[in-house]
Image (cartoon, rainbow over all chains, first blue to last red; front, side):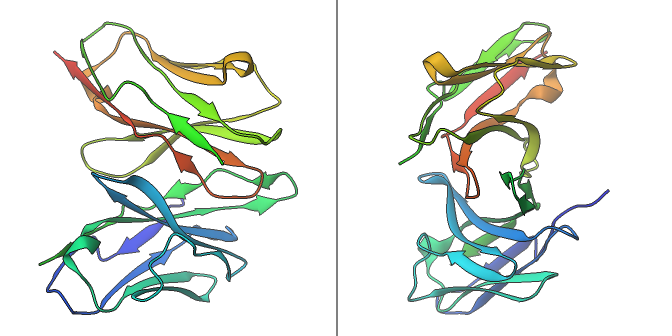
Length: 116
Length: 113
């Protein structure tokens, strides 16, 4: 049963600290998405990659957030320095984009981040 | 710009009742995809269904059914004979060919025993 995995599942940190979240997409999927979920904003896209290349990161605060895909099996989302307003659940999703466009996105369990 | 509206923020039913969750979307694309995801109290997002804009056939899967109507830009979700385990937040989402999901605000469904 192929699944997207995310680590850590929970993270509590202090304001100003660096936070790194990791995602392992489903093997064979070529597109990876990062979403953030908050009560106020709901689910919003931060960034996405296709074949490891960043395609859109317009939803991400550029000054403190960065997203990378060092290889096809790992995507990272980093916040430096973290702020209390970054507290949210961060979801990674993966999918397979082909000739018919983007197929279904499958979500990981999320990383619940609390910045004090 | 794309937009998904789920007007019902919260619905409460008693077990075994039928319930319909509404979803209305806006897009200028002629090819697009519609989705429903379930988020149970544990927090993960579970994929339920995907429909293509060129396929308006309704779909039934067990107690779940979906009604896609292009004329009214709606993609409604009905749960028949609801159960307590159906309690969750349900999200409708839209994507055009090749890109990211635009989510509705979600509908919290509470099924009471």
